[in-house]
Structures are given as C-alpha cells and as structure tokens.
Image (tube, rainbow, N blue to C red):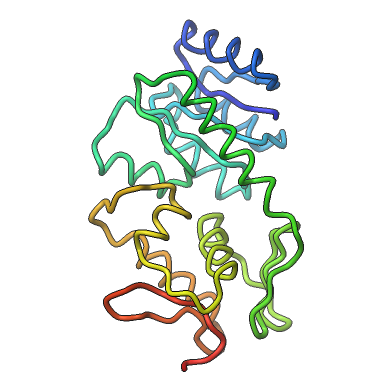
Length: 225
C-alpha cells in the first residue's frame, strides 16, 4: 500500500517510515499539517496516518480539509490524548480510526492493514434498494435520476445500512462498524449523522428509507411497514 505519514517528530517519523517500509509499504512523510494536506490531495494514498499535534495546522484541520476536498482515503489519527471528547472530535473531523500514544508498532501496522482492506474490499458492484443505488466503485449515490452528494462518513453509514437491508442496527453496531468505536461516547454522533443522511435522501419529498426502531436503533427499508 501507499501511505502518507504526517509526523513532526523527526525521530518518530524515521521509526515509522522504516518500520512500515519493512512491512512492504511505500511511505511518504509530511512534517507539518500544510504539507500533509497538500500531499493528501495530490496523491491517491491507500491510508493516511495523521498526528493530531502538527505545526502549521493540526491533524483535525488536515482531516477536515481532506474530506472537504473529496479525499476518501482512510485516515488513522495518532493522538497523545485519550479523553473521549478528543477521540470523538477526531472521528467527526473525518478520521476512520485512532490510536493513542504511546502505542505498539504492531498495533499500528494492524490498524493500517485493516483500514486498507476495508477501503479496497468494497468493490463488488452497486448496492440497490428500491430507487436508491450506491455505487461502491465510483462512490456515487443516486435516488432515481437524482445524484446525492454525501460526505465520506455519510457514504459509509449508508453503505453499511444497504449491506444489511431490513436488519435493525443498534447505535453500538453503527459506532463499531462505521466509526470503529467499541464504546458509546455519550454523544448524539450517530443520530446527528442519520438526520443529515435522511435530509439528503428525502430531498424533494422522496419517501423515508432509514427508519427509527424506538429503543433499539435504525433499519433501512423501502417501505414504512
């Protein structure tokens, strides 16, 4: 895989590059946030590893900038903070996973591999539900003839729903599969994203597809029944 590692600590960066290259990856390094944002938009990386504390602009800002620029490469955020609120901020900025410093290098490699597999594993053709179509190769969503522009997190959320039609998915399941979080951060992050997703899917008076199952979670189906 081709990786971008954004780390301003020279010693740490050298260690990461050497280790990842020994694992067979091609690695580019960025010593500041501005360089990371520029490289991330120019090259098609398989995974981007971002330190939160970067000079120029921090990792959260870089993740936001990349996502707004349409970059869909998985982002692994490295942070010295372990507070739940900081983890949530990173994930809401567009990161797909996080790793708290200090970490074992083997764990970093495992996270990178998992993100790379997930990013490349969903290329088996479009998913369809009623008049809704999600193209996993071109990363396009259409409802009838209308194209729907989704943020990367919204796309992953809809993809997960469409992979499990008619199945009630709990908030815990969605946090685990879409946000890679194994705990409930005590925020309304899932509900907020589903609300935004619904607005986009139902624009123009289209019928509801993502339904609430009170006290349990959410389900996607083409009818209200």
